[in-house]
Amino acid sequence: MDYGYVNARIRGMKSRLLDRHALEDLIFQPDLDSLISDLEKTPYKEDIIEAKVLYRGVLCIEYALRKNFIRTFQKILEFVRESEAERFIRIFLHRWDVQNIKTILRGKNILITNEEILDSLVPAGELDEVTLNELVRQPNVRAVIDLLATWGIVYAKPLTEKFPEYFEKSDLALLECALDKYYYKEALESVKTTSYNTMLIRDILATEIDVVNLRTLLRLIRDHVDSAEAQEFLIEGGKELTPKKLNKFISLHSIEEVIKELEQTPYRFLADVPEIAIKTQKISVIEKQLEKFLIRKGVSAFSGDPLSVASVIGYFWAKYNEVTNIRIISRCKTVDLPDEQLKEELVYV
Image (cartoon, rainbow, N blue to C red; front, side):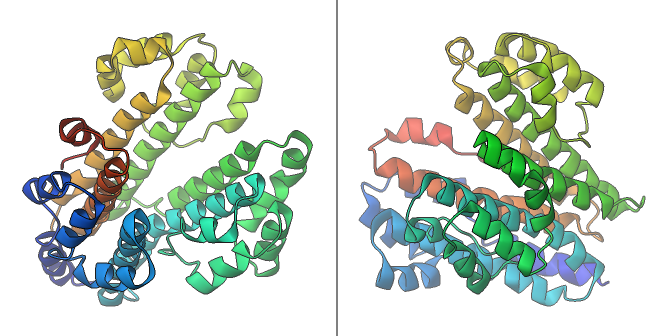
């Protein structure tokens, strides 16, 4: 694998990412039409022009962002085809398969329209648009899982195993957790060797598991879920939060206690979350800080060995963050959020 060539291509793509100044130009646009016009002056031009034929407003931007994200990683896969780097990249792209299946199951669970579900999908993984469209056409949760099984798609296995319990309790979190556990277990199994590349990816995956577990713990504690039941929703393989620590956290009675216990870990920054958010159990504020931490962790891979997959992994997270920031800007424009407050919602890397 010629990582020197790959790194040169990625550096070129990185140079076209929107910097802080460009993002703030988007923030200061007075309305969605102006925002769309400004995006036409960026590398999103081609996608915005295509989107404007089909949609207006936020839907136009969402469509363009999805198309651009998919096209970007298809381009990367083309120049790393049949290499070690391709295998590593697909580990992270598979998260979109999991997210898309979750989105479809949620839509079927709450009976929203197929069009609404389709507008929320990002076919950047193995499941292409045709496959996802067929899944969306299924009438209910059971039918979606059955079709996945018929096609021999690996995610059918954890869903099929958990479906009876979901059917009994009507708790979609059981299916979503089963998907997450399967994804992370398979991802970690695929990077068990001790090369620089596998250790880098394993470190990021383990950090992500920590973040997922913390988000889950906060919800479980807020909702006063029994500790024995709560264990079922936690994922093995975290970096800092060992099974022993997680078991201890489960027995705690408040979010304040969890944050205090995290003081000796890399998650000590949660102590800076406004006290009012903690007291009112506004978990979204805490989740935002965890998301920022995870994104910065992923982007930090850029500083790794240039003759490795590090730059590609760093770019994945940087691109994901850029798309996320633009989505936040567009959505905030629809509710007239003040510009200074909007800035605080973004993650600058």
